[in-house]
Structure formats: C-alpha cells, structure tokens
Image 1: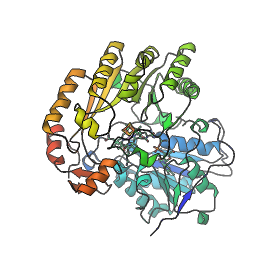
Image 2: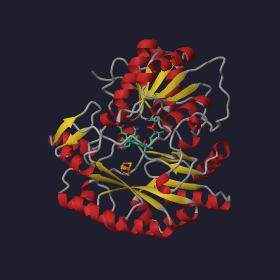
Image 3: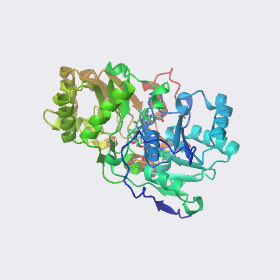
Image 4: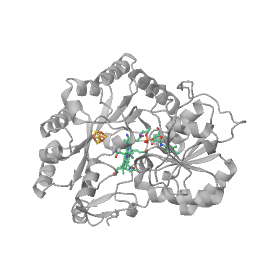
Length: 440
Ligand code: B12
Ligand code: SF4
C-alpha cells in the first residue's frame, strides 16, 4: 500500500528562542507527554547502552511547543526503574495528567522497550500515540497498527501541526520540515537536571556539572556504515557562534554548568564558526571547559584550529577513528588518512586535550592483518579512552544495503540490525567471554 505522506509546516510566526514564556495552563493542561522508553536489558542489545545523557531531541520538542503556547511534559524512562516494576505508576501518572497525546522517542536500539511502553500505555489509557526519532524516520513504511501517528525526520513543526489540527485531517505519517536552526529555542534543563544522568565526563577529567548541547542538524559526509543522511535529509545546518556562546553562559548561570559536551556528528564542521566561538569565549572572559565530537580531517586541515580550541577551554575530543588500516578507512568512505589520525592525536597530547577513539572491528572485507594494524595504531596514538565495537549493519546505511544485496550476513533482528558472517566469532575475541551483549 502506498503511504500517504504529509509535509508539516510550523506556525506562521517564527519561533523565538524564549524559554521563559509561561504555559497557557488553563487552556491546555498538558497537550502531550513525551516519553523516552526504558533502556533494554544489556543482554537484549548488541550495542553499548551505558552512556546516560539527557535526550535533547525531547528537550527541543518541549521547548518549541512551549514557545508556541502548547504544553509538553518529558518523562525519561531510560533512567527510571524497569517498566515491569513501574507500569502502574506511569499509567496513573498519564491518567492524572490526561494529555491529548502520548509521544514516544524511538531509537532502533530500544525498539523492544518502546513497543512495551506503547502497548502498556495505549491499552490502559486509550490515548493517541505519536512516535518520532531515528527508527521510524528510517522505516516509515513499517509502522504497527497500535501507533496512531509517526513523524519522520525533524519533529518540531510536525508535532506543532499535529497538536493544532483536527485529528481526522492529519495523515498517519507526517514528514518533518527542517526549520531555521537559529530560530529554534534551546532545550530547557529544568526536568533533566533533576534526573540521575552522568553529569561528569570522567574520561576527559571534566567534573560535574557538564551539560550536553547539540548545535547542528545533519552531516555532509557519507560514511558507508552511517545512517545519518536518512534521518536528516538535505544540507547540514549549523547554529551560529553567538547563539552557542549565549547558551553556554545560560547553562552556567541557570544550572551551574562548569562545562559543555557538544554531542553531535561533527561540532567542528565549520572551522570559521569554532574560531568565532573561541574569540567570543576569550573576549567575554568565559572560562568554561568543553568537549566535542569531531572529525579528524577538519582538525588536521584547518591550520591553528586545534591550538585555538585548546586555548579556549577544549578539554576533550570524541573522534570516529574507526580503523588503523587505510584500505578499510577507504572502504568505509571515511575520507581520512592514517597520517592525519597520527598527527591529530600527537598534537592533542601536546596541547593537553584528552581523546576518545571510537573503533570498529569486523567491517565487511577487513582481514585479520588489518585488525592487527588497528591495534598497532592504537598503541602508537595512545588515546585516553577507546571503544571497540564489532561491526553490525545499522539501518539504513550504504553498507547495510550492500549486505542485504550480497547476502553475506547470518541474522537480521527485529529492529533491523544486520549481523554479518563471522560476527559471533569476532565478538568472542573483542568483547571477551564476560560480555553480556546480545549475540545471535
Ligand atoms: C548524541 C547521540 C548519542 C548520545 C546521547 C543520546 C541521547 N541521550 O539522546 C549517546 C552517546 C548516549 C548515544 C548513544 C547511542 N547512539 Co546515538 N546519537 C547521538 C547523535 C549524534 C545526536 C542525537 C541528537 O541529539 N540529535 C539532535 C536531535 C534534535 O535530533 P533527533 O534526536 O533525531 O530528534 C529529532 C527527531 O528525530 C524528532 N523526534 C525525536 N523524538 C521524537 C519523538 C516524537 C514523539 C516526535 C513526534 C518526534 C521526535 O524530533 C527531534 C527534533 O527535531 C545521533 C546522530 C544525530 N545527528 O541525530 C546519534 C544516533 C541517534 N545514535 C545512534 C546510535 C546507533 C547509537 C548507539 C546505539 C551507538 C552504540 N553505542 O553503539 C547508542 C545507543 C544509545 C541508546 N540509548 O539508545 C544512531 C541511531 C540509529 C537508529 N536507527 O536508531 C544515530 C542516528 C547515529 C547514526 N547516524 O547512526 N548517541
Ligand atoms: S559517521 Fe559521522 S561523519 Fe560519517 S556520515 Fe555519519 S555523522 Fe557524518
């Protein structure tokens, strides 16, 4: 059946970043409760799930709705007791607030707990369910009956449309519209700051309170293992330096933040923006520490960038290094070289910036010798922290499609992750016998 797809537009007036606006509580007690589902059991997931940070996606949605006189409430079950112990509590909670909608963030790695939550709340309350997030942005054609509406892609304008249009006039699948990122209000931390997240970054020696920020949407690169372009279609968009600077100061003033972790695909994708932010921090005498996710090539190519970042508070870099074999990096279409990796890690050591290297083993086509090259490179560059993941195909990346076509896999799970041939054996080697990850 062909899906009826609808493009949503935000309200006619431009959204202003004004987080202090009060709710119109009399007219709309609660329009929507936005849930992040509970964490799956570690033994039900092939991926690592331990990094407990606030879901900024829900924060952006709540702030945008609030800015437009609608009221959303966030509940993050990822950091609460398992649903099985607390379902009655949350059912009563929803019944007491009596929202018009229940919204659920759906990430592929927590698909099973998302369904458990949706079934539990729908049966008990009958409230219409709207889902959004990476999973259904990727699989809009597989939305189960129990779900009333699904938003694909960016959710602000789509959710606004859903909450302000008669329900029978809305299609089931709503395509999000990317809005001007500088007009979006930043997430509030009033709810997040009271939850048991990790508010420090030990690997970068950054004590609490470190708060996360996301200052861009989309990525212009096309690494073959990554699904980003399926979620954020179109060009990458970046918030401007002055807005980032103002927001950092607000997080320090309102929530006692001593540092910020820029959690996004590539915070340094525009070096000009980073130079400008550094000047603002220097001129404003703002002494906050910060860390970010970045790409090796940007840091390598732009002269003086790393040095300026170190001088203006950058304490840690989270880097997608992936492999120590040039051939494997090229297969991944990673667009970086071993020489660039070594140069960046060496300069970080000199500048006192701590490093985290994210590595992938078992990319299709990789040989045993190339894995040894990865270990040898890690011994040379000596990151302060390393994650070693065994490759699985994430829907829907280029490599995922290639595996589907070639048939060189032995399992696809309910969330759509593909397990290439040899995965099980490599997990035993890389994760060791004590690992409790899901290995089909
Ligand atoms: C920061 C980040 C993390 C952080 C924090 C995540 C968190 N607490 O939210 C950490 C490091 C913990 C993390 C971990 C993982 N992550 Co991650 N992460 C990201 C990253 C870089 C940014 C997320 C973000 O804030 N985006 C900005 C917001 C605004 O966008 P958004 O989240 O998509 O939300 C918008 C829409 O989706 C929509 N929306 C979202 N929820 C809802 C709900 C409703 C009701 C509606 C209507 C709309 C809606 O509206 C939002 C606003 O426009 C994304 C890549 C990316 N650029 O998004 C990957 C990404 C989400 N992660 C991914 C993966 C695979 C993982 C890991 C599994 C990696 C691993 N360990 O192996 C783990 C699993 C974690 C988990 N608990 O599920 C994949 C998800 C793929 C998928 N199919 O689900 C992504 C897309 C990266 C990629 N390109 O593959 N991640
Ligand atoms: S892995 Fe990072 S740099 Fe590569 S396409 Fe995905 S988000 Fe972009």
